[in-house]
Length: 151
Ligand SMILES: Nc1ccn([C@H]2C[C@H](O)[C@@H](COP(=O)(O)OP(=O)(O)OP(=O)(O)O)O2)c(=O)n1
Image 1: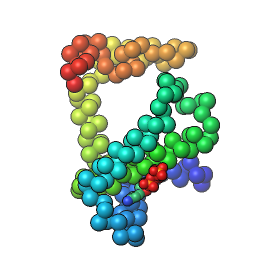
Image 2 (image 1 turned 30 degrees about the horizontal axis):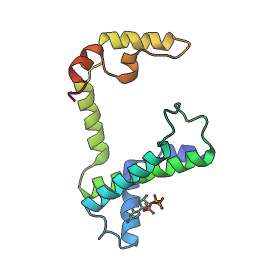
Image 3 (image 1 turned 60 degrees about the horizontal axis):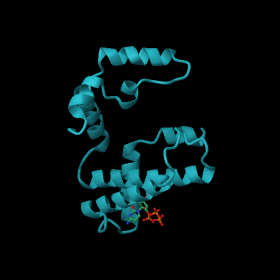
Image 4 (image 1 turned 180 degrees about the horizontal axis):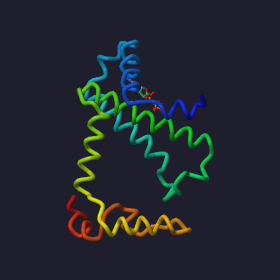
């Protein structure tokens, strides 16, 4: 099995258990309070932001980035994820379940309109791969009138 295949199989539950073990082995449970973990999470989001700071907009897939830069990005994304998983655990929230439920709520709040379906079909046929603003933002014209500034 390749490294990639292994990584694809990682579950939130595995990460939750590993973070719990990591803290226990070091006697760090005492420091992993909800507030401390939240602050650590925000700190790591700051470190993640620094990677993109002053670069302007960058294309998807980061084609011009060096391997070391992408590796660093992966490390900061991981720190954010690991603290988020640990914070959820310490707060007694099943993050996977909560996220699936939130996706369902999002789908109800932002239903796919027939015009968006039409746009997506057109985009699939479009050799340039360009999509309309509706497809890119996920906000339909009618939604945007009521939601921009009001969400
Ligand atoms: N009390 C702690 C300290 C660290 N970690 C774990 C979770 C993060 O994945 C990582 C964070 O480690 P650092 O605080 O050393 O942060 P960085 O790895 O980002 O290092 P630096 O800030 O030097 O770039 O270690 C943890 O669980 N609990």
